[in-house]
Every structure is written in C-alpha cells, then in structure tokens.
Length: 334
Image (cartoon, rainbow, N blue to C red; front, top):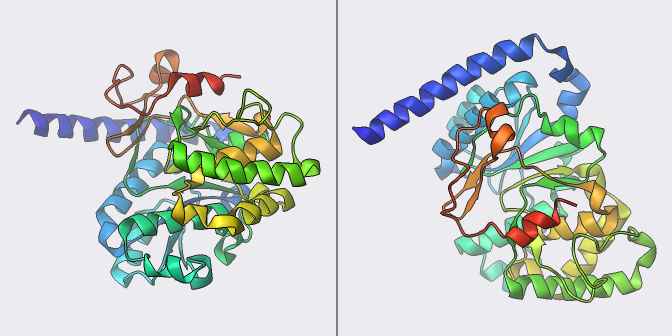
C-alpha cells in the first residue's frame, strides 16, 4: 500500500507539474522555438520491439518536462523495421513528429570477427556505441538536423527543463557536446583509446584546439584522467560530428584495432575526448541542473536552488550510487 501511494503521488505531481509548465510556457515567448529551430533539433533513440513500454515512458516524460514547449521531433532508429503497432504507438504518444530509420548493415560491423558476436546483448551495445560515435550524423534521416539529444529507453529525467532549454543553450553557446559530469571510464578501455588518440595528436597537430588537453590531462597529454560524461545521455552538435577534424579522429582510432567492440569504448568516452581535443573546454558543457538516472549505477540530482527552481523530483542527498567521482565533477567546474 505504501509503495502504491508513492506511485500515485509521483504521477499526480508530474501531472500538476505538466499543467504548471504548460501554462507558463504558453505565456513566455522567449522559450518558444521557431519552426526552423524545431526541425533542426531532435531526440534520438535506438528502439527494439520488446522495449515499447520503456520507450513510451521515456517519450512521455521528456515531452512533459521539456518538449511540450517546443515540439521537437523524435528520430527513432532500429536495426530491423519495427512492428507497425510499435511505430503507431510511438507516433501517437510523442509530442513532436516521430520519424523512423534503419541502421544499415555497413554501419553495424566491420570485420568477420565482429559479425560473429553480434548476437550477444553486450555486443549489440558495443556496436551501437560505435554507430552513435561514427555514423549517426551521416544518416539521411538527420540530414537537416543540427543538434540531437540522445535518449535511452531506460533512462529517467527528474527536473523541469523548459526554462533551461538545453537545445537553445547548445546553439547560443556554440557547444559541441553536453552531458552529465562525474564518472570515470574503465581503465582498460580508456587507456587503449587514449593510446590511439596520442598517435592521432602527433600526426594532426593542426586540427587540435590550443587548450584541447585541459579537460583530459594534467600533464599535456602524457596521461589521461579517464573522466567522461555519464552514459546514455548527451546532446551533440551534428555539425561538429560532421567536421573534418572529428571524422579524421574517428576514422583514425576506429581503423586501428576495432576498439569499440574489442575494448568496449563507449560513445560518451569518445565524445568527451573528441569535443575537448578539437573544440577546447568551452565547447563542452556539464549540465548540473538536469536530474538524470539510468539503471542502478548512474544517478544525478541537482542541489540547492537548481533543485527547487527546476521542480526536481529526485533526492539530492541520495549517494547510493558509485559512479559520481568528485575529481571528475570538479574538473568540469573549470
């Protein structure tokens, strides 16, 4: 009974919150995006037929907490065509237009060894990380899109983001990548990628930002601090992902040893390194006022005025999770 009461309270709060933000946004023209801005920003989600419930929940939640004021489209990708019942339901519940795309075979594996392990759930995740990092920006469905918000079906957001307007913040500040700070990459994967990055740096000095190592290394690139943004959430500039420097970096490290599949490089690790290295520290933004949760290990809840002002529905004193690394959180204060 107690648990049921909490559930009722949560959804009642969310409904009232939706009404409050909706009436507020309708009377605040500054946060209403233009039709052109709507079409050039969008949410990106990888979908599976067996994840309908989770996808619907994530779409409804983000639409209530942010997209009700903007109607940005949803770009939903899959390896195979989704059932018509799935596409119909996702189109029905999404605030913005829902569009569906297939990830082509040539972007989903690159060696016979890789192809043999695709059936593993872990391998699917690894190949998806590679697709997000290297091929998402070139998909025809996103041809005219400038910024994408990567959404995982099993992620949860806890704060109102209408006044914050993350997409608007990206454009105004000319950002390449924004996410939630404070975690460290697995040492093996991080170091193998960093070794490849160091080789790229030696060969391509003209492509690097003069302050490119500031967020990545304390000794001018000799070692990597292994700090990165949290998984399964990030807002990215597709113009940056389509740039010559970014493509050169991705192709350089991807061609060496299939690290996304063999060493488990995450897209958030690669995005953190690439955006810092090529765009400098001011092209990267750490969101501290977005409440975010994914699985039992990833959690972020704003504190103080940010928690109150954004009507966050999370506990800022909850330290049950282990991936918040103080040294990495402090790094993105600079």
